[in-house]
Length: 413
Image (cartoon, rainbow, N blue to C red; front, side):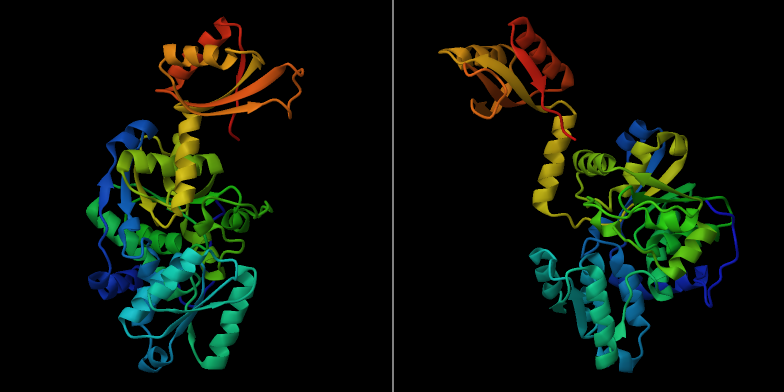
């Protein structure tokens, strides 16, 4: 991380700002639990505590900053209403609490926003406007409407009121588990980690603050370290897929955060799957980034008492199903085998007998006679199957080989 420098901002967020925010919002949000995960602790070599922010009413920590900002508005600002540009958790958190407080809210979303997110935001009482094909276009339109209608723009991260609200996550974590010596926090625009680092630095004892970004969107990493890695691609962690971090948050991260690590899509998928299987909790890709960091960089955290923020749980059910099935395939509990057969009576029956003998469940079969480089009398058989574990799969492959079948595993990326 870059050398520590003084914050070059007019009014940095202080611990007093965060504690005042907590007193302001505490009665209106869920005080989510911070619980130890013994299984994940054994897996990673760290003592792992999880903060379940996916249990907020809108399933994300974003409610905190949005509510703090709303409660600091003047009566005139409340009467005119608020506006934001967001296709994610900020939209829902702002809409929910604005409606609860009787404040009109308008959310501008790109036209390609999934309909489920549009409907959820409308369900919280917001007026949704679809504009532009990108977030930048939606953002520009929101700022135009702000000026035309006299609305108050609520930025998703680059606002001191938002940062103070998000920092209340750390207030609760450190009150519940004073032994935490490392906080692992996902970074999108930087609002959450800026607020949490403000709290950590005021504790009077060393607390490591480590940010996590997806490898496909290392925007804050670039800003702090002077690198120029591309920010693009289809990431599971769309909640932290930010191309440009905030100016205020960048200055605070440079001053207060110890390190930023990057995690792969595979690590994110594994983390989402493990949290569901082990903790029985649904977490979106961005929400699983902290655990992904522990899995991808074990030496960085081994022996530490680590607080991990599960910052959101809004994941599309179909996407979650894909992630879980891919994890089964990578662990050897599900596989697709490509077997070369002779095109003659009984060929499929003889293969099926081996699967039966090894007690392997066949899920799906697919023959290929035409689009193959095999001779005309040969065929390719794809068998999707379910096994107990990788050792069981390897026994099946060995049995097929002993029966003189040419077989290979169709690997995932």
